[in-house]
Amino acid sequence: MSLSDKLPQTSDRYAMMQRFRSREAWHVLKILSEFVESAEELQGITPAVSIFGSARTARDHPYYKQAEEVARLLSDAGFSVLSGGGPGIMEAANKGAFYGKSPSVGLNIVLPHEQKPNEYQDLSLRFNHFFSRKVMFVKHAIAYVVMPGGFGTLDETFEALTLVQTGKSRRIPIILCGKDFWQGLIDWVKTRMVSEKMINPEDLNLVQLIDDPLEIVETIFKHYETRGFEALPEEREQLLNL
Image (tube, rainbow, N blue to C red; front, side, top):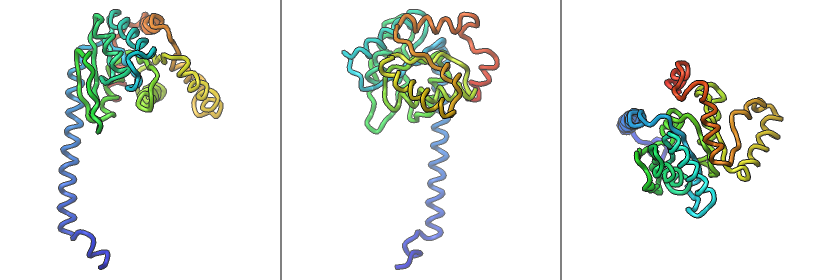
């Protein structure tokens, strides 16, 4: 049997391509609707702080308790808290905010092994795509608090750093909580990335290492004390083109 006998005939290939293009166009529309619906839902939750961290952290772990305390303090200080909506640190963040004075928001992701939303969400949104979910984390947060976590946490953290570094997003506090966990990464960034001129030395100022929950809240307030939490006109333009 020749190769041409094994390939679909021209008419069959055309029909297959048309079906694929129809599915792709429909998929693009679903992505667009995900952006529009989530943006509308999140309009009223400002000012908000995004908290990231591992989904695998047990409820009795010190990281869980620390994240819960940070979120409670932020919520009582008037900040809505955004988390990934799942278990572990995400649950701790939602739980702390849920019992505080400000809204607890979960941006849940649909995964092959389904992520079960935690029960501490005043507002729960559902995303099929990581990229649209990450845009909402950046677009609607005036600060990031990053607890220890895995690949997903690193992805979200470096995405935020890249957007700020390149001027695609406004400058916001990006706080790593858990010095023992993060110090090795910071040291590697200094000894490899800075020394080999992959980034500028001043790029290290984009991130701060803070463990004390009260100091985290104070650091966020200090960043905005002379300008307020509302985005400046040029920052609105950045967020529009994120």
